[in-house]
Length: 402
Image 1 (tube, rainbow, N blue to C red):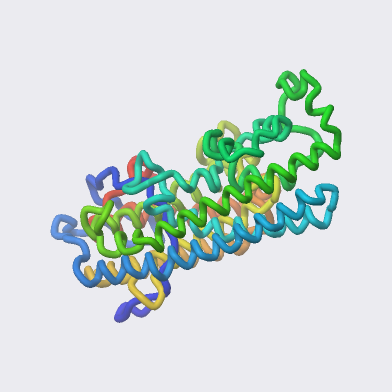
Image 2 (cartoon, one colour):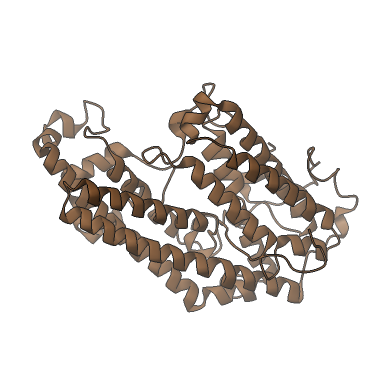
């Protein structure tokens, strides 16, 4: 690593809110920094031109390009699902829509780690407007409810997308509609089964309704991403770079970006990998049914996208990144430690031989190795990095010591 010049091209985040404080310096585990900082009380954090360059790079070189790609791929998904809806019995049109969904999801998985401001949760993030949940609500999903709405056909009105719960909207609902089996996902006692309304649709009616539902949901996703992009292009990028508008200072804006990086800690590590391997919120040896993207079988791919995005943000690009801020504060050792841990994580993810739900059963050692590597990245982020840059840890991650 060259510690004498700014790093690489910046990329993505998710804001969990500017909450929580770092009460003590965490000891670093093997593979990272040798131990706690000797004098954390003297840290003042980056300031001035250094902060401006980092925040401007995040806004202009990472978030805006990612949103533009996501908007373009969402448009393509809207067109592909509309073509399927026009010919719902066509296996070719359905396959084309599945391909378009995969590309749209690939672009959105970058934005997942960029939940700053309007994309982020309104209850925890500065400027949060919950846009993310309307585009992709996983793990808040409910295939049975999607099947019920498929019968009811309420998706034909915009009010449905404005008023319904997010577990029947967005890319996750579209994924289920595109890959769903012929039968529905509801228990036998649910109304669409007891009333006979599901059976009354027949195979052709089910396909037609699913295709129409997917097309309507894709149009809504496209509109929401367009709106998010317009907000960033319309002045939010400047607010982040300048620490103005919803942000009281550039340090608060930097903390919002830092919060975004914790998507990899709380979602990628804990929920996408930790729960299936049995480490988090799983009462069995493993919980493969809790993996992401079960219908499409793409869960391993999104782990790699999340980590690549984290790295792009942390290391920067042709401008400043968090590693350069560490160097500026006299801690190039921490930048080197993070680079090594990210190398190990990327190598472990590249070695995965299939979707996570399959691996935790057939090759658990592969998933465990990737999970352990991610733990080291998270520990360094929550420990010495937060201390040196005087950044608050999101409340959701403050008490997590793994």
